[in-house]
Length: 279
Image 1 (cartoon, rainbow, N blue to C red):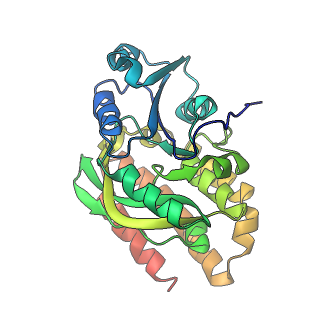
Image 2: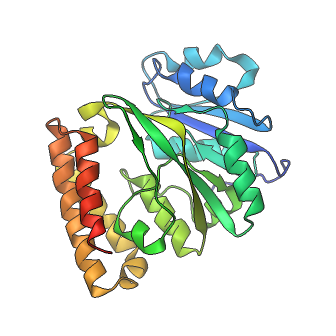
């Protein structure tokens, strides 16, 4: 059982960077966290048993960050280990190959402090790497989130809400961020979208972690998420449930196409066209 410390100042943000063999990208992520215009922050890098020298790269930053080294336990468990050691009222999951814009924290903190009923804030972002384009985020909607995963894993979330929702489920090896957001929604927590591109999401083509999984593993994970969040699915209308079935089929087909080189931008357009049928 994880024991959580809540003694930090209310304004402190814990930026947690789980990393596995992404040493060549890690400095960009760390420096983007260090360069935030919002000053009340701690940066926790959790190395998930990397074999590429990532811990040595992280140590270069000395006391400006905290480094946690683990055997290979999978990134969701590594992130949870970072949360366990965090002291902030808010937490932020930053992928070790992504980059925050300097004002990410300042702008999201301003919203979450003003909107007291809000438990998390998410933003738009820009893809770079294998493809370059801007992702226009959508407003928070309980039913839309049940249908498909449109909120990025990089969100600013109140730690108390994160804990109430149970954090990342170790039994969900893929799409764990979507599963967590559904758990958060089931607990009655809501989010607010800030449609500005406030971080950069690196695309690796067919080499991302999810794409390395098998189609069977991906399909099983989708089924596990649907079974776990049956309460949310039961809230959907008949037509919405049919849309959900189509979304599942599209996601599995898209997963297969991505493995053979299909562009993420093309798959995103297909998904948006299907969602538009919902009205």
